[in-house]
Image (cartoon, rainbow, N blue to C red; front, side):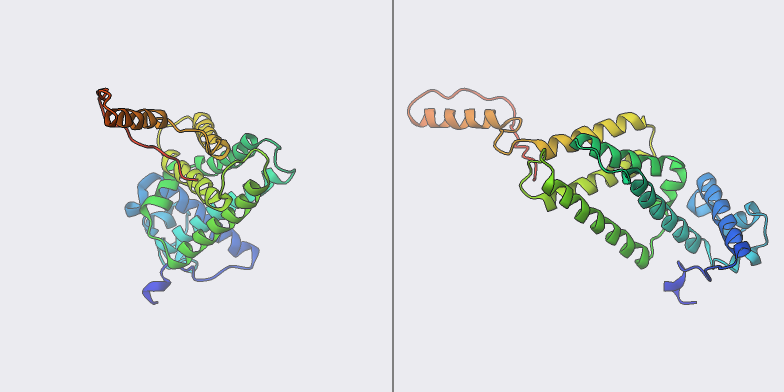
Length: 244
């Protein structure tokens, strides 16, 4: 088999018994990878955990990378299904409540087994097909989010498409990075919702932190040019402008 095929399962079972056996392999693999990590998560260990021969396992998957690819696909599918289920009754009217629904669904999809999540997204290699699917899923989320932001009365950002990209990337990046660490999920949810709500609803003409001091420095410079003694300034001032 060509190296580029190492992420591909050998076959997709159709009979109920074969589907059950394949799922047994995936369940056993999830436990093995969660317990032992990627390097030590061998197919022999997976076969033993699934209570089957290594030959039977190879009927479904050629190697552990193909098993991990299937687990990652299942994780993506579960996340999309969970979000669709929670949004089925309609999104809340308030922006913060809508953000909370999405953030909570994302956290819940990742918190079940943080150790396995670390293997899937930090240790395991990714196939070109998986990378393509991840990009497509992200772009789909950006399109939906941009439409929501464009029509929401609380949103004040000038560029809803860029804001949608930042919103999707912020949720995914922070949840992926922090859910595997010791963190209170409720606190993480509150912080992400607060961060995004503040970004999406800020007044564009409102000076950001430190901007008033920059104006004061400019005025002091003008005063010095006019013969007024300069006021000493201690420390560097950084213009922390948020990107819309």
